[in-house]
Figure 1 (tube, one colour):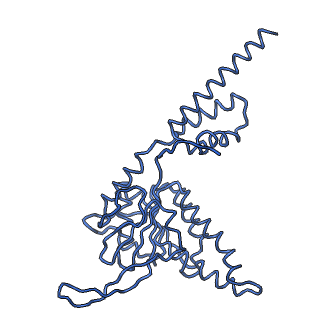
Figure 2: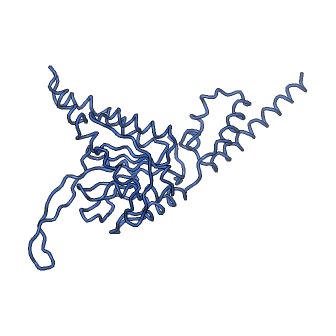
Figure 3: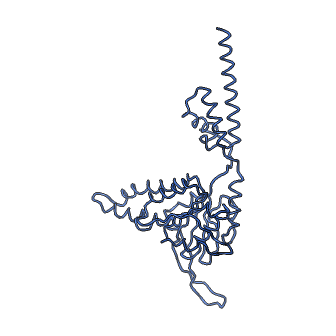
Length: 307
């Protein structure tokens, strides 16, 4: 068991945006993504909403000229496998932010997990419990693909809608639409860096915020929200650079140690595989390897002199 000092690293955003229909989830995600990148070409959107995101391209919204971002359209059945494939496609394409609009379809849409569960439970000898035993690994694999994506990921989720009565400025009771729990598997919100809840009036609050940037605020998500978020994400310790990885691998081979043992060693020392350690930790590791290489040379020289 490794006991180590906690260290905040540069990391990728995992943001959930929830709200009832018409609350502005898609637009909020687009504005935040643009604030994070400053370039519409670096944004990829996975659209399960009947291509509705196309309506935002080349329009002026909230004082921002929205450009031609990249899109992938998903059609029914909305299987978790399709979501995973779409995420991988955008990773390979090289975008910096992936917007999943919306993740609710993977759960409650046509061909989603709830429908698959119902169909599976009708098969002879199976019940709801055994059906979930098949569905849960699919959900977990999709969530894992989001959490391990190379890009920032913003996901929108529909909220179950409820109407409440409240007094207007004239004292008359009028109905107001409010969003409740997101339409997705219970507990999914724990996986995100931040969960932003939108009202029908496009006002956001955060029900979870590991950054602390928006906690306790009532705000309208915009480009500045994305700028603040990316600044916080990139303010941690920088991750190891590719040239440093090459340098470490070279020294590791010089020591005559099997390459597949390097990740177990960095896990033991720093709690992460080689590509997950920071540049500062990498330099510490290089110092350790240099000392071992020097000891190996001295031992070889001593053995040569003794011979």
